[in-house]
Image (tube, rainbow, N blue to C red; front, top):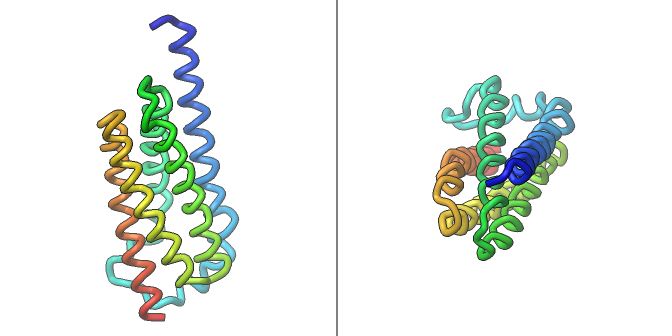
Length: 161
């Protein structure tokens, strides 16, 4: 591997990480602060993590997602690389839309549908990533775990409010 190739790989990791962090942290900056009173007033599950933990968990999850998609991006395997990258982008889009639906629109039902689709896309991403790079796939395990918890919490709010 020559230095040009290495520097391009490092630059691509920095860019991918920056884009994912930007997308991830636009959500709470735009949607969450204006509707925390609404969220705080909801009947929530006892499994709901403390509010302060969300920023730390999401920071970790966005970083591992960035590393995972970067490993796929730099992979020399052509298929199913393109499909995996497109599905990853789609689930990130649904992630942004979920915050809008849940916090801005206060639409608990549509946000539940959104997160269920996101769950499926992430599982498919893991399967496709596994075919390309097992480390990249494993990096998504904490993310799907958190998403499944979030799905349960969204469902609980949907049923109980």
